[in-house]
Length: 297
Image (tube, rainbow, N blue to C red):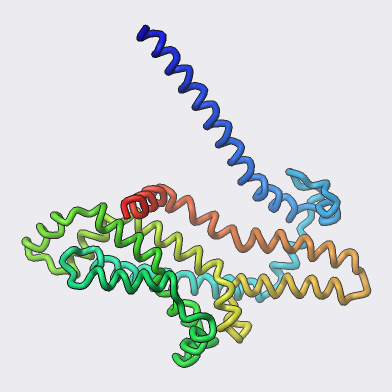
């Protein structure tokens, strides 16, 4: 009887594994296919792409769209600006979020519940676009890099996740022992808390860096000078110019329309590639940090 139950159990496990593997394969295909198609379309003849002849692999490979995009000096200027905004912005985010999350995670902080209530309230109530713009303008940050960094120096959700990680993953007894040994709060944070918090720090770096890299709306509102445009805004301008040229020009209209269509795919690749390259370096910490920081809140 036990052997029969064991065989049934093994059979059910095999069926379950087969179903899970099949679903995982389908999800993987659904995620990978758009990426592969975009890469193939960017290298293919745009006429074939519009006709639906490019399904997976590129056809009649051409680099005309890439040449048009990379010959534009604004692209490189936008890349440099976005790298600076991302590096400085992520550093500010990480420092400010850590300095806020650590004291809020300590049970001996007076009024901790009141502070968390006020901070959490900002997730549901905000001043709105016009008051935010007037505040940034009154601080003299319009048309400067700081308009993209200071207003979002701390994300409430990320603060809560990091605070929860500190509470659930770093025993309070370790902190008490460090205090008994004469460790100050600053040294405790620097030499004890942060070395034990690599997973959540990696998650915060990824979240904030991706947010800055894809930042578009704030730049559209606050940035006036083209030399300060981030990459996303530059790519928008390039795409709009290519499409308007195709519509307004009477010479070679069809070729310009096809080129504008091909530039769309190149723009997607250019804007997404750095994030795809960065993710594998933080992947080993990413899952652990997200799970611990969210499930134990």
